[in-house]
Length: 430
Ligand SMILES: Nc1ncnc2c1ncn2[C@@H]1O[C@H](COP(=O)(O)OP(=O)(O)OP(=O)(O)O)[C@@H](O)[C@H]1O
Ligand SMILES: [Mg+2]
Image 1 (cartoon, rainbow, N blue to C red):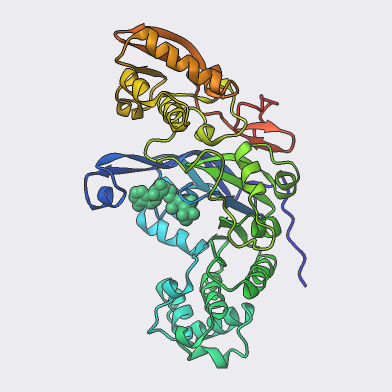
Image 2 (spheres, rainbow, N blue to C red; image 1 turned 90 degrees about the vertical axis):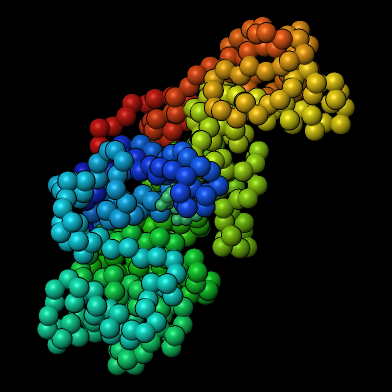
């Protein structure tokens, strides 16, 4: 068994992502309708820093829509960076010509969740794996066959003769994903971005495919980005884990430390939600306080603050939070709903994110009285500590909140975490 290549902390980065943003503009077209809005910007990836050392496995973990796949695709140049940079060794992806990008796609390979979608049903296994070699200029059929045979053997599809002339439909899900892996490694890549590579497979074969991937990594000196919802497999598979939320990395560090001592409240919530008997369905549907927010209009400050059980005054409270609170208040049976509703009036304008919120039509004193009632109902509500002033404004009031930028990643112990609860311990240059 070849030994594992060292992943030294001081090794030069294989991939160096700096302040990367990938934004999608929605302009009233089909796409916008698909996403249920007319215009706007989805910040799929927003200010991400990430360095991969040769030979390591870095997991990107987070709920649906957190930007994992977009970040993965950006590493192959499949989506352009809106700003920031991606360097592969010393080459800047953003400055590459089409031809250079094609060459990059030989050294950076991507494996997707669904082997059925990845494999052409009318190609034999030999054609599917050999095609990559042909596309990248290997003319000799004999050489191609030798490459295909070697790749199939490496992924455990042997005796190879049994598989060369088969079609995808003749194979099991696990075998198909092995073919996909064979096709990925046949070009001798250095980096493999695996986007949920086992989540569509039966539980019984997942561990086998992940073990195969680790073996391939050791044998071929690969570096992996492993994208998953599933913290249980990330724990087993990754050297480091990056927890993503709405386009940002909120915590990153060695897998062991992240699992032993999660710091970001979002990481804690994810870990607490790993269901014991079925590590399959991992990401929680019922984090405190509701759903993942709209990615086109993320919460101000820390994007997690509206759902955060540990939120404090400086998290970036805003108009939409106040709306939520008023509506929650009205759900309580003892609220003088009709009268309050008349005093407060319409709340829709609070949906435009702002650190000031003007509300009320029935008199400033009456509005203040309602806000006071709400506050005494729930004195622990952290939004109130984020209020810096309440001014009279026409027949209502204007509530001012403490403005807060999204917290940057900062050192805490052996990890980096983006949360106001963790003051700076000094950020390393690396
Ligand atoms: N081509 C696109 N055009 C517009 N928006 C997009 C596009 N691709 C992704 N998005 C949006 O960007 C955000 C991040 O999407 P992405 O697919 O990267 O998330 P993800 O973490 O991979 O989610 P999942 O776990 O569901 O695969 C989402 O809000 C998504 O709707
Ligand atoms: Mg995805």
